[in-house]
Length: 171
Length: 292
Ligand SMILES: Cc1cc2nc3c(=O)[nH]c(=O)nc-3n(C[C@H](O)[C@H](O)[C@H](O)COP(=O)(O)OP(=O)(O)OC[C@H]3O[C@@H](n4cnc5c(N)ncnc54)[C@H](O)[C@@H]3O)c2cc1C
Ligand code: FES
Ligand code: FES
Image (cartoon, rainbow over all chains, first blue to last red; front, side):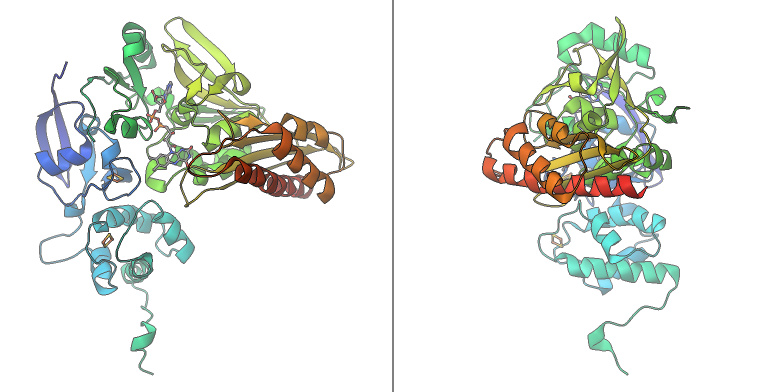
């Protein structure tokens, strides 16, 4: 009964062919088969959001999909965000600058949730940002700096002037 | 935390899918968005021997308006698509307003309207919305197709009148008359959690401002969505002033529902929420019916 199934999945632009058991979760496929361990696994029941990836461009829980369902589809993980090892994606850069992460466990999930969100909402309100990240849990940074990071990223990506943090105000 | 082994089928047509389901019977489960089924499989609370994946079946995902204002939504339409549909916002504002209350954006990107109804979690929003709107669903098996009205669909906790060989294929929402008003509201521990208690309300005003019809369903207070018969009867034909609305909500709390205590909330607190949320929802729905 545990027959395996050949699949062909594009991950971060690269095509992978593997043969997997149907019960293999997409999250475990990415981590164990492809060794893309940037996708984190916290709860495996859809609550924490750490495993969020883009599936055909849409943010989904990779712990709530089977790898066989990705056959013929495109997945993007946090590893696919930056153009090269020396440059961060603007959203990653903003998390770095605004201290939007501490241990970093939740960060890949936040990033993969927020990349499509910012594409659809280039100038989001704080309320919209908080709703967007309502399905991602962070247990150590707290959400304030994450929200700040999102606003910073939105401003930078749109080329808008960035309001200086109050404690840096010089004039 | 890993699912037990199963055999996987990914048919591309509904006909193939009902054929597979008929062949495998009780051994099989259909996989829709997987947002309820896969967590239970990860915890091995469910161990189906066969999974029939409906995701490749393109013919099950659509939103179609009928000439008379009714709405047909394919079972595999993602909750996020329903949420963003302007057609749904126009034809079924109650459904539109309920969507963001379901879980989180990433879950709605995958979860389906049909899956939510077939799953029939007593704390979920859509069964109560369908019941309030007097909607129905289409079920298909190799034996044929049939229509199931919302009041006949939900039998109990995670239990519907769908037979094991039937696939829910379509959700139908009837047109609403003018001077209709809607509201849906809930109390949950955290945003996106299942509701402790929630309510979906639809009222219609007569030309003289009296209540022509009121329909009120609660969720999180029973084995399935609970239609508040006595509260609705009380409102019928009456002027919906604040005193009457408060009385109707109180009647709902004391006689229409029979909530249980669990780790999330006591029965008494749930009853209290029924009165408070019932009043809020009716107040909003009547105001909207009068205003638009
Ligand atoms: C963290 C989290 C929070 C959530 N919060 C909420 C919430 O607040 N409110 C809420 O309503 N839901 C909530 N959900 C559940 C979510 O809405 C699910 O998407 C939904 O309940 C099931 O839909 P699905 O398409 O994912 O179905 P699946 O999980 O694929 O299936 C669920 C069940 O229904 C059966 N089924 C599915 N489709 C059909 C069909 N077409 N015909 C016959 N049987 C079918 C399956 O066999 C299975 O038994 C939450 C989920 C998670 C993970
Ligand atoms: S690991 Fe997928 S949501 Fe927590
Ligand atoms: S940075 Fe540690 S959990 Fe969010």
